[in-house]
Length: 460
Image 1: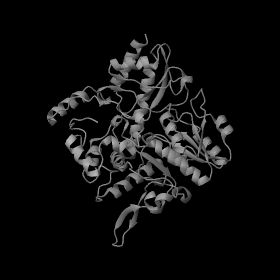
Image 2 (image 1 turned 120 degrees about the vertical axis):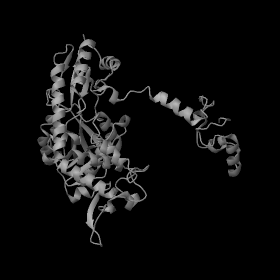
Image 3 (image 1 turned 90 degrees about the vertical axis):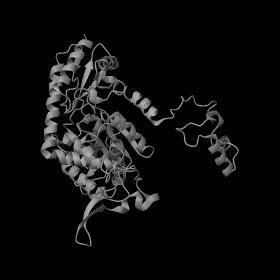
Image 4 (image 1 turned 135 degrees about the vertical axis):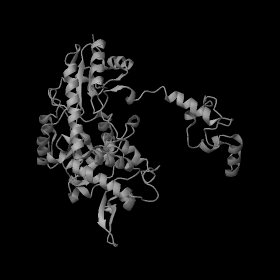
């Protein structure tokens, strides 16, 4: 242990430490931990910490100098998506979620309720309208947990213990799902068609059985390709007695059919694209949605807010089927409900209310148009192939570099103040040196021109 007073580490003053040790009857801090931590894991020398700043203003100047070296997507042309999207967040969203009624250090849950339950209810209602369903939860941690939870719900509904997920599921989501379902649920991956990039129906048919609880599809999938045969996937799943679960990015639904219009039993995903800043990848919240089917609704582990008349003749907002949750049954709960992203639901509610149905449609059309513009301009660049997979795309699409690696191209783009696409070569080596490019409503024509010019120079 350090023998000096270090102001950023609590109780590092030697005199304070000595007083605490004397009070509890221990000779040293080492005595407290030696029976719990193996000696080989203990540090053999003090930490090499820099000299601390004594004045707060000096510390702020030092830390600000470090932070100012960073560049954000706001300062660059950004073509990186892959699950976290550079959307425009209306100023109204930040204004509302930073109000003291909502902002809190824990779960968006202040000690007194000032309309939070109603705000969450309004979020659920607007999400249900967007998804064309009846029941949407208060957000859980992120889309990955929502996907894992939705699949576990399916196992409880069907009393089966195997699920099928697509090879075109976001790799980060797939890894989280496999971890979340381990060890009692078997997860099998369904291949994708190497020509279209869509789910391989023949492989799906071969892997379906009376043991399968759920078939999952991502739409659009990780390649940005629309699963045009999703209804057939639903029909095959249902014929085998399985549920059909769709992982859908909700901001696409202004122009795409919602999952419940092509046979979904459950939908899930992340709400980051609905008015939540990227926050270095941390602005995330998961949603789960379903029709009003009691056998499915009973399996929701997370909070659901509903509307009910009060004894005073007014309307109130509160938990639906409270007995489902770990708050009520604790050790017998289906899953535990912990720190949820309730604050993000309020941000998403403000975003959805601000745009409205027409605004969501305009958002989708804008993204489609800018994606088409980028694809058209890139077609003239030598050294790359646009969309080597033939399926129709939305928001994201694949490009293949012929003579350079994605890492080399992205490094060169970064020098030109451009954030390149997601490198697919690690998770999908069969595609070669392919990148996943993303456009949003913030992708301007000047951004497109800058990328096309830069790639022409880099690949020449």
